Image 1 (cartoon, helix red, strand yellow):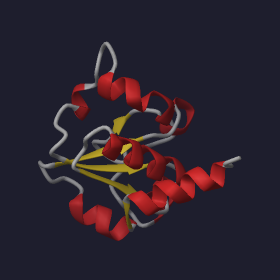
Image 2: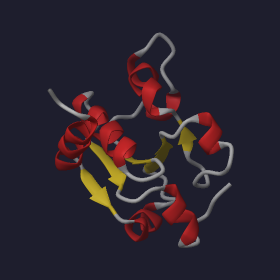
Image 3: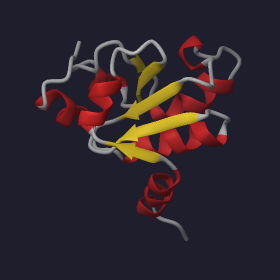
Length: 122
């Protein structure tokens, strides 16, 4: 039987994990969308400036549900997923790739490290 860490490990093996420094270099580009997959109580305390908040549990619906999120409409863009520590982001990026996204990456550490390193927040 698989455990949570098995799913996270599989996801991390399937996607490109990037550092906060690398993500900061992509922030603000017109061809890059940041997706915060944390839960609403977490994002209420702050998120990466300009990021779209889509909780991990609703990602598939936001991509292919009855009312898809327009932020996920262009599967040829670069999408940078992040969470609090990297696990949910890796799982979201892996699922996005399975759903046809060409370039889905995950920040390997998460929002707290982004904020600590002075990345723009809102």
